[in-house]
Image (cartoon, rainbow, N blue to C red; front, side, top):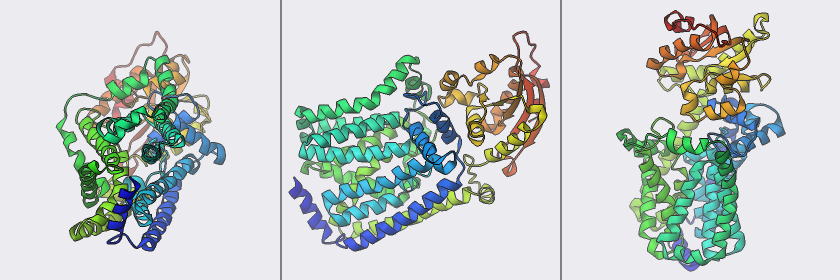
Length: 533
């Protein structure tokens, strides 16, 4: 088996990837530049709503949450425990995990195809925008992708060596994936396809190590099941039912175009070519059949699911685990190809470098107010990173006024509440009204568990409130109906302040009010001061 892999290395390496020193130098140069840029951006970019929410979860550690498993919250808690409260501290563990990922790929490729192919794989991974930016933000995709790479490496070794330690590593990697995100199920699906559809895989069912790996992987699944079983299956209902229309929507057919954009078009075609070549060579055995199925199954499955599942949220990162085996296979496949393949590879590499540079340039521009304003003029508004810092500063000013000394701070949606909570360092509770996006993003059950939702607010009695509303959190046609409901949720609402940064692309409104009592008489929506947002 290793002889056939060695033949691939010998045949291809002699033609195109014999320059180990050149690829090693390229890897170190790209690694140094990428890690430096990640560090600067991680310290400069303000956390967007989801990150702030995960930070809130880190302050209330649990076995799982209504939206995600616990790994992201644990990593954030670790970062802030070591370095104190702050953006860079929160993201520090994710920067570390993101830095480890290319080394895992380099190690796997070196073992299978030689040193030059290993350094080439690591370089390509760092230049791929989806991986190159990994670790800048405190997101679950960072530990999930790292665990995916570890699981692929362990599976390749375990299927070849049958060693207990390799099976154990596989089980631990899968457990870590389960603790990172429910999309870990796709790793199991790819592995199951390998075990059922290939001769080598079917032979592994008799291996005790396989069952050891599956048993250990359940250690990561167990906290998810316990949380769901004790909370009316809230997280599973959100992931499998509430967030998905489960009806065909043709707009999702553009997914390949989205992937071509985030991977750069030529390199995306090259990855698909690598998947096809792995499938063609699957009859040769290791490692082609493993790489083919671990690459094709996630990419194809997420495409099909995308046509019926969630059609409103960011989804371009879903197939990322499927690209990892293709990155491993690409150097030897290019080396074994003809002159046309190598020219295509060179062209794709050049475009990939430009794509990586463009991605970092965009994030760097978004990290400053002047840069965000510039992007706004070009209709590339970085709405997730800007605006709420201005809102937090104005909120601090208002809270410092004597009239709001005893006021309860309330945001009109969970994301703004999390952002304000992060900006204030958790020094005071921030409640959230029952905004539609709370349920849309699966956060409403968690707010209820934390007693930070509208029901918990009403339980406080007729206390004074400082309400911060963000009309632009909703689509334009939905803004007025939502703002009109504010007078049905709070009594004696009075407009206090307004802020429209970035030419009105973001809008914030502050109101003084009182938590309503049971015998209240609601103001007419037409008379509500919030209607004039």
